[in-house]
Structure formats: structure tokens, C-alpha cells
Image 1 (cartoon, one colour):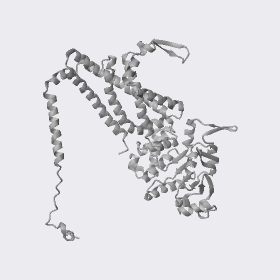
Image 2 (tube, rainbow over the protein chains, first blue to last red):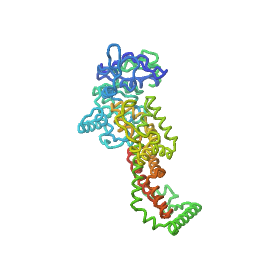
Image 3 (tube, rainbow over the protein chains, first blue to last red):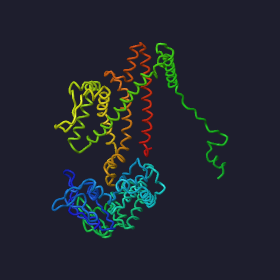
Image 4 (cartoon, chains in turn green, brown):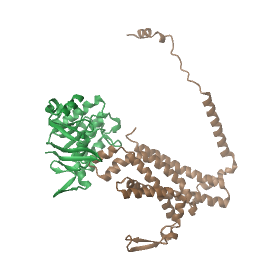
Length: 251
Length: 290
């Protein structure tokens, strides 16, 4: 298993956001997480790269327990350095891109391999050029993010996430902040990634993307996974009433 | 379609009828006000230049007098120490204030509260007279044995006392300016940097601070320009900085206005230089934002 969550709970104060999540994603699998807002989808992603700590349950990525070291029946929180190392194998793409506005496009992409992986500059420059070419922005290497369209910015953010050569890439509503006519170019890049065998967990409202690309569709509601299965089955023949109600609204 | 057809389609703009000329509206009151200001400016310039009481030749003589230049250097030294140490300590205080450790953030808050509440001139006198409170200072294990001790007067002379007072005072304001800058950065930036596994120190200095500088620089510029002039209060410690030095000279020769002008010219030069530096810093940290 590439990603495995077992009995994961997470609360913010009195608000119980994740109520016992079990999820397994294979190597090369594309899992799309659907669900109404407030159902815990974004928190689920943040738990997977330890941007949020789990309170109960475990998250493992490629067999490695995330954020903790197990000794007997205790989990000891890892030092920050170890957590940062673990995060470098997990890419994250944000809804609002969160590009670094004071750095150029290529500096944005090169930052993590240089500082988190300490790879040599020449190698990183090559990698950056290759990734920008892959997302179709080779000519924007020297531009600042603010001068790009939303779609272009999100493609830079995807290249930045790929720069660590992660084992899994998490997408948190990557097209929700985009103008409708810019959604397509971002989805194209994501489809290309999926075809090349990248393990992906995608939170989105793009049911069309789920139908075309997802191996698995997971439907979440009120902090629980209500239904999961092959894309065609969950989208076309949902078993659960709440899944049917949700799909009825978004389709 | 030919040109003739176009003209025919829009008869009002026929070929023989020239486009009407635009006449901008006149603003007689505005013009009168400008004229009035111009006259006032001319009068002011005339008053400055023609009145012999300003003693412009005396100003010229003393502007580069060795004692005045030395005092300008001391003013610069005090400003530099005040800014350098003040913003260094201020940055540390801002980070403490934002820490999730309650003791660290309370101590930082307490520092700002204390040093903002005491007038600078009082603080300077406290430091200057520290030897009255603690005649000797010892260094060693806290609450344990001392390795060596020195007389307070030997360690904290007038220049050190002045620099210390200015720096500690400045740190309280710098802390708030830096904190405001750090808070102005979009929290998504921290999140993205953390998600990329960028080490904590690098995250601060490469990602967060450069963006915070956009807010910090204009406020810090105010403070620094303020401090250049604020160094004049150390004259109460009889330190020969610019303001004290011109007083010494005019008490001797009686040319009060001329020597106050000498000081004014130098303060102008220093603050203008800083404003130019500030302009370029703002341009540097504003990159990618236009």
C-alpha cells in the first residue's frame, strides 16, 4: 500500500472533523475524494502529510508511519527534522496555489529540492526546466507568479510539488479558485500525471475528471467515508442515499 | 467598402466638417492659489537669504569644522548601534511574542510594555547612573559562583550607556513593527513552505521575512529617521553628538542661529540619505508585486 489510514480521528476544539477514517491507496492509484463542504475532505489531505496531527489512529506512507515512532504501545512524536523529511515524499497542491510571490517561477520550483533535499544546483536547474516544460510553462521560468493567470499559477504549483519527486501527490480542490475557462488546462496536466503512474489523492468537485481519471472514488460526509469503490460504480450506481443526493446536486 | 462610403454612413463627421476642438475647463481659483503659494515661497527664500542674522558665512565655516564632523560621526555611531541592536533584539522579541510558549510570549509582551512606558530621556539617565544601583557587575553561573567581575563604571561608559538606552528603547518599537510584518504574510505561505519540507530557519529567512519586509520597511524607515533625530536627547549625558556639539560652540561664540542651522543641515543630509535608501529597499522587497 502506498497510503494507508487506519482509524484516523481529528478534532478542532469541540468540532470533530474526522471520525474514524480508514483508507488504502495503492501505488499508481488515482483516488478522487468527493463530498459536500465541511465533510472533512481538506482535513483528510492535511492529515496525510502531517500538516495536521492525528489524535487517534495512524497514517502510513509507503510503509512508514507518519509523524510518530512506535515503541511498544506508545507513539512518540518525531522531531521536526524527521517530519520535514517525511513530507518531502508527499507533494501538496493547494486550492489557492500559495506560490511564493517574491520568487520567480523557477525559484519557486527549485526551492524545495535545494533546501529540503540539498541537491546540487546544476541538477536542480535541469529538473526545474524539465518540470516547467512538462506543465507547458518553459517560457515563464523567469516570470513572477503575479504576472501569470490562475491556471498557469496552479500549473507552476503542480511543478513545484513534483520537484521533490514525491511518492504521492495530494490535490486540495486544485481548480476551485480558477475562472471556468482555466480549469481545463490544469485538469490536462493532472490527467497527464495520472497516466504516467503517479499516485494521487484528489479532493475536487469536478465529477467529470473523477469519471475520466479516477480509479477509485471516495465519498465523504460529516467526517466519515460513506462509500468508496471504482469510479464508474460510485458515480453511476451509488449505493448510499447520501451519495445519490450529492451527485444529484452537482451533476 | 471605400472611405467615401464610411463618411456617408456617418454624416455628422463629413469630410468637410473638421472634428471639434476640445477646450479644457479653466480653474481660476486653483491658479490664484498657486500664485499665492509661489509668492509666499519667494518671500520665505528672500527672508532666509537676505537677513544677515542667519549668518550664512558662519554656517559655511562650521559645517565641516573638525569638531562638528566628529559629532556627526558620533551621531551616526549612536544611530547605527541603536538601530542594529534595537532591530536585532526587536526581531527576537517579535519571534518570542509569536511563540506558542506562554512564558516566552508574555515576557516579550512585558518588555514592550515596560520600555514603551518609560520616556527615553529617563531610561538614558538610568543607564548612565547604573553604577549607583549596582557598583560591580559579575559574570558566572546564574545564582552560582562568579568567574570575574568588573566595575560598572568601567564597563558602561557614557557612549555605551547611550547606545544601550537607545537600543533597548528602539527594540520595543522594532518588536511591534517586525511582529506586524510577520502577521501581514498570508498564512498559506507558511503552510506551503511547511508542506514542501523546507527547514524552519530557511522558511523564516527565505519565505516569510522577505514578504514581511514589505510592511516592515516603511514603518522601520519612520523609526530610523526618528532615531537619527532622537539621538539629540543624549546631549543630557554631555556626549558630544551633533546637537550637544553645536550648543558648546554657540555658547562660546554666541552665533546661536547659525550653529542651529549647521545642525539642521546635517540632520537633513542624514535623513535624506536614509529616505533614499528606504526607497530602494522598498523597490527591492516589492519585486513580483507590481
